[in-house]
Image: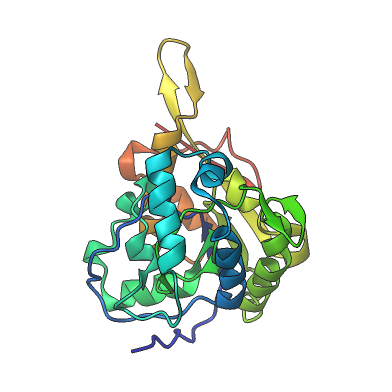
Length: 268
Protein backbone atom coordinates (compact mmCIF):
# COMPACT_ATOMS: atom_id res chain seq x y z
CA UNK A 1 0.00 0.00 0.00
CA UNK A 2 1.13 3.55 -0.60
CA UNK A 3 2.13 5.64 2.39
CA UNK A 4 0.17 8.81 3.04
CA UNK A 5 2.56 11.53 4.19
CA UNK A 6 1.96 12.88 7.69
CA UNK A 7 0.31 16.32 7.55
CA UNK A 8 2.17 18.11 10.30
CA UNK A 9 4.02 21.39 9.97
CA UNK A 10 7.49 20.99 8.54
CA UNK A 11 10.19 22.90 10.38
CA UNK A 12 13.34 20.84 9.81
CA UNK A 13 14.29 19.11 6.57
CA UNK A 14 17.36 16.88 6.48
CA UNK A 15 19.28 16.12 3.28
CA UNK A 16 21.53 13.09 2.99
CA UNK A 17 23.76 11.35 0.43
CA UNK A 18 22.95 7.91 -1.01
CA UNK A 19 25.24 4.88 -0.63
CA UNK A 20 27.07 2.88 -3.27
CA UNK A 21 26.58 -0.30 -1.23
CA UNK A 22 23.03 -1.57 -1.61
CA UNK A 23 21.09 -4.56 -0.33
CA UNK A 24 18.03 -5.76 -2.20
CA UNK A 25 17.05 -8.74 -0.12
CA UNK A 26 13.39 -8.84 0.90
CA UNK A 27 12.09 -5.70 2.58
CA UNK A 28 10.93 -5.89 6.18
CA UNK A 29 8.11 -3.40 5.65
CA UNK A 30 5.35 -3.11 3.07
CA UNK A 31 4.82 0.67 3.17
CA UNK A 32 6.23 2.59 0.22
CA UNK A 33 6.05 5.61 -2.03
CA UNK A 34 7.37 6.09 -5.57
CA UNK A 35 10.28 8.29 -6.68
CA UNK A 36 9.23 11.74 -7.83
CA UNK A 37 11.36 11.90 -10.98
CA UNK A 38 11.11 8.43 -12.55
CA UNK A 39 10.77 9.72 -16.16
CA UNK A 40 14.06 11.60 -15.79
CA UNK A 41 15.65 8.52 -14.24
CA UNK A 42 14.49 6.48 -17.22
CA UNK A 43 16.26 8.93 -19.54
CA UNK A 44 19.53 8.32 -17.69
CA UNK A 45 19.02 4.55 -17.75
CA UNK A 46 18.50 4.67 -21.51
CA UNK A 47 21.80 6.48 -21.92
CA UNK A 48 23.72 4.18 -19.56
CA UNK A 49 22.58 1.13 -21.52
CA UNK A 50 24.42 2.49 -24.56
CA UNK A 51 27.84 2.22 -22.97
CA UNK A 52 30.11 -0.80 -23.39
CA UNK A 53 31.63 -2.53 -20.38
CA UNK A 54 34.98 -0.93 -21.19
CA UNK A 55 33.36 2.51 -21.25
CA UNK A 56 31.60 1.87 -17.92
CA UNK A 57 34.92 0.90 -16.31
CA UNK A 58 36.34 4.29 -17.27
CA UNK A 59 33.17 6.31 -16.75
CA UNK A 60 32.38 5.00 -13.26
CA UNK A 61 35.99 4.34 -12.22
CA UNK A 62 35.26 0.71 -11.34
CA UNK A 63 36.76 -2.67 -12.21
CA UNK A 64 35.48 -4.96 -14.96
CA UNK A 65 33.52 -7.23 -12.60
CA UNK A 66 31.66 -4.27 -11.10
CA UNK A 67 31.05 -2.93 -14.60
CA UNK A 68 29.36 -6.21 -15.54
CA UNK A 69 27.17 -6.09 -12.43
CA UNK A 70 26.33 -2.44 -13.03
CA UNK A 71 25.41 -3.01 -16.66
CA UNK A 72 23.13 -5.87 -15.60
CA UNK A 73 21.39 -3.47 -13.20
CA UNK A 74 20.81 -0.99 -16.02
CA UNK A 75 19.40 -3.74 -18.25
CA UNK A 76 17.05 -5.07 -15.55
CA UNK A 77 15.81 -1.61 -14.50
CA UNK A 78 12.13 -1.32 -15.43
CA UNK A 79 8.85 0.30 -14.48
CA UNK A 80 6.47 -0.02 -12.78
CA UNK A 81 8.28 -0.21 -9.46
CA UNK A 82 6.76 -2.72 -7.06
CA UNK A 83 7.84 -4.34 -3.80
CA UNK A 84 8.76 -7.40 -5.87
CA UNK A 85 11.31 -5.68 -8.12
CA UNK A 86 12.30 -2.73 -5.90
CA UNK A 87 13.01 -1.80 -2.29
CA UNK A 88 12.55 1.28 -0.11
CA UNK A 89 15.61 3.56 -0.42
CA UNK A 90 16.35 3.80 3.30
CA UNK A 91 16.33 -0.01 3.51
CA UNK A 92 18.22 -0.62 0.26
CA UNK A 93 21.15 1.71 0.96
CA UNK A 94 23.64 -0.16 3.11
CA UNK A 95 26.66 2.11 3.57
CA UNK A 96 28.07 3.37 6.87
CA UNK A 97 25.55 6.21 7.20
CA UNK A 98 22.61 3.85 6.89
CA UNK A 99 24.11 1.20 9.16
CA UNK A 100 24.43 3.86 11.87
CA UNK A 101 20.90 5.10 11.20
CA UNK A 102 19.79 1.50 11.85
CA UNK A 103 16.10 1.59 10.99
CA UNK A 104 15.61 -2.05 12.05
CA UNK A 105 13.99 -0.95 15.31
CA UNK A 106 11.99 1.97 13.87
CA UNK A 107 8.32 2.17 14.76
CA UNK A 108 5.61 3.30 12.33
CA UNK A 109 5.83 6.72 13.98
CA UNK A 110 9.59 6.81 13.38
CA UNK A 111 9.14 5.96 9.71
CA UNK A 112 6.43 8.63 9.37
CA UNK A 113 8.75 11.24 10.85
CA UNK A 114 11.67 10.08 8.67
CA UNK A 115 9.53 10.09 5.53
CA UNK A 116 8.40 13.64 6.15
CA UNK A 117 11.73 15.10 7.25
CA UNK A 118 14.40 13.35 5.16
CA UNK A 119 15.39 13.77 1.50
CA UNK A 120 18.11 11.60 -0.03
CA UNK A 121 20.07 12.97 -2.99
CA UNK A 122 20.80 10.51 -5.84
CA UNK A 123 22.64 10.57 -9.15
CA UNK A 124 20.00 8.36 -10.78
CA UNK A 125 16.82 9.34 -8.92
CA UNK A 126 17.53 13.01 -8.22
CA UNK A 127 15.93 13.17 -4.81
CA UNK A 128 14.24 10.43 -2.80
CA UNK A 129 12.01 10.17 0.22
CA UNK A 130 13.11 7.35 2.55
CA UNK A 131 10.26 5.00 1.58
CA UNK A 132 10.50 5.65 -2.16
CA UNK A 133 11.10 2.37 -3.99
CA UNK A 134 14.36 2.10 -5.92
CA UNK A 135 16.03 -0.51 -8.08
CA UNK A 136 19.72 -1.37 -7.94
CA UNK A 137 22.08 1.07 -9.68
CA UNK A 138 25.52 2.63 -9.58
CA UNK A 139 25.70 6.22 -10.80
CA UNK A 140 27.14 9.19 -8.93
CA UNK A 141 26.01 12.75 -9.57
CA UNK A 142 29.64 13.65 -10.35
CA UNK A 143 29.98 11.00 -13.09
CA UNK A 144 30.23 12.52 -16.58
CA UNK A 145 27.99 11.08 -19.29
CA UNK A 146 26.77 12.06 -22.73
CA UNK A 147 23.51 14.02 -22.42
CA UNK A 148 22.15 15.40 -25.67
CA UNK A 149 25.60 15.38 -27.24
CA UNK A 150 27.32 17.10 -24.30
CA UNK A 151 29.66 15.31 -21.91
CA UNK A 152 28.68 16.58 -18.48
CA UNK A 153 28.19 15.58 -14.86
CA UNK A 154 24.62 15.30 -13.58
CA UNK A 155 24.42 18.56 -11.62
CA UNK A 156 22.82 20.54 -14.47
CA UNK A 157 20.42 17.65 -15.08
CA UNK A 158 19.18 17.62 -11.48
CA UNK A 159 19.87 20.90 -9.67
CA UNK A 160 16.86 22.95 -10.79
CA UNK A 161 14.26 20.18 -10.38
CA UNK A 162 15.64 19.06 -7.02
CA UNK A 163 15.78 22.63 -5.72
CA UNK A 164 12.23 23.31 -6.91
CA UNK A 165 10.91 20.19 -5.21
CA UNK A 166 12.68 21.08 -1.97
CA UNK A 167 11.10 24.51 -2.21
CA UNK A 168 7.69 22.88 -2.57
CA UNK A 169 8.42 20.63 0.42
CA UNK A 170 9.22 23.69 2.53
CA UNK A 171 6.13 25.70 1.55
CA UNK A 172 4.21 24.59 4.63
CA UNK A 173 7.05 25.70 6.90
CA UNK A 174 7.13 29.02 8.74
CA UNK A 175 10.11 31.36 9.01
CA UNK A 176 11.84 28.98 11.43
CA UNK A 177 12.30 26.40 8.68
CA UNK A 178 15.82 25.08 8.17
CA UNK A 179 17.81 22.62 6.12
CA UNK A 180 19.96 20.23 8.14
CA UNK A 181 22.70 19.34 5.67
CA UNK A 182 24.10 15.90 6.46
CA UNK A 183 24.99 15.25 2.81
CA UNK A 184 28.54 15.09 1.49
CA UNK A 185 29.94 18.06 -0.44
CA UNK A 186 29.45 16.05 -3.65
CA UNK A 187 25.72 15.72 -3.11
CA UNK A 188 25.16 19.06 -1.38
CA UNK A 189 25.97 20.68 -4.71
CA UNK A 190 22.78 19.22 -6.16
CA UNK A 191 20.84 21.93 -4.30
CA UNK A 192 20.79 25.65 -5.02
CA UNK A 193 20.57 26.70 -1.39
CA UNK A 194 20.41 30.42 -2.18
CA UNK A 195 17.19 29.88 -4.12
CA UNK A 196 15.50 28.03 -1.24
CA UNK A 197 15.47 30.93 1.19
CA UNK A 198 15.69 28.63 4.22
CA UNK A 199 18.42 28.61 6.82
CA UNK A 200 21.03 25.95 6.01
CA UNK A 201 23.12 24.37 8.77
CA UNK A 202 26.17 22.27 7.92
CA UNK A 203 27.98 19.81 10.18
CA UNK A 204 31.51 18.70 11.01
CA UNK A 205 32.37 15.60 13.01
CA UNK A 206 36.00 15.63 14.14
CA UNK A 207 38.36 13.21 15.91
CA UNK A 208 41.03 14.31 18.36
CA UNK A 209 44.53 13.24 17.34
CA UNK A 210 46.83 13.11 20.40
CA UNK A 211 49.92 12.95 18.17
CA UNK A 212 49.26 16.39 16.72
CA UNK A 213 47.04 17.76 19.49
CA UNK A 214 44.51 18.68 16.82
CA UNK A 215 41.10 17.57 15.60
CA UNK A 216 40.89 16.00 12.17
CA UNK A 217 38.33 14.63 9.73
CA UNK A 218 38.20 10.87 9.11
CA UNK A 219 35.79 9.93 6.34
CA UNK A 220 34.46 6.65 7.72
CA UNK A 221 33.80 8.23 11.13
CA UNK A 222 32.07 11.20 9.49
CA UNK A 223 29.71 8.84 7.65
CA UNK A 224 28.89 6.92 10.82
CA UNK A 225 28.31 10.17 12.73
CA UNK A 226 25.89 11.45 10.07
CA UNK A 227 23.80 8.31 10.51
CA UNK A 228 23.90 8.64 14.29
CA UNK A 229 22.84 12.29 14.08
CA UNK A 230 19.90 11.43 11.83
CA UNK A 231 18.87 8.63 14.19
CA UNK A 232 19.04 11.10 17.10
CA UNK A 233 16.82 13.53 15.16
CA UNK A 234 14.23 10.85 14.37
CA UNK A 235 14.12 9.18 17.77
CA UNK A 236 13.73 12.53 19.52
CA UNK A 237 11.59 14.13 16.77
CA UNK A 238 13.82 17.20 16.87
CA UNK A 239 12.30 20.40 15.51
CA UNK A 240 14.56 23.11 16.95
CA UNK A 241 18.15 23.73 15.92
CA UNK A 242 19.39 24.25 19.49
CA UNK A 243 18.17 20.80 20.45
CA UNK A 244 20.79 19.29 18.16
CA UNK A 245 23.47 20.49 20.57
CA UNK A 246 22.38 17.68 22.90
CA UNK A 247 23.65 15.03 20.46
CA UNK A 248 26.20 12.82 22.24
CA UNK A 249 25.93 9.44 20.50
CA UNK A 250 29.20 7.79 19.57
CA UNK A 251 31.03 9.86 22.20
CA UNK A 252 30.60 13.17 20.37
CA UNK A 253 29.97 16.50 22.07
CA UNK A 254 29.03 19.89 20.71
CA UNK A 255 31.99 22.26 20.47
CA UNK A 256 30.53 25.76 20.72
CA UNK A 257 33.86 27.53 20.16
CA UNK A 258 34.49 25.73 16.86
CA UNK A 259 30.90 26.17 15.67
CA UNK A 260 29.32 29.14 13.92
CA UNK A 261 25.85 30.35 12.97
CA UNK A 262 25.72 28.06 9.92
CA UNK A 263 27.95 25.20 11.05
CA UNK A 264 27.68 22.87 14.02
CA UNK A 265 30.89 21.12 15.04
CA UNK A 266 30.92 17.93 17.11
CA UNK A 267 34.15 16.44 18.39
CA UNK A 268 35.32 13.42 20.32
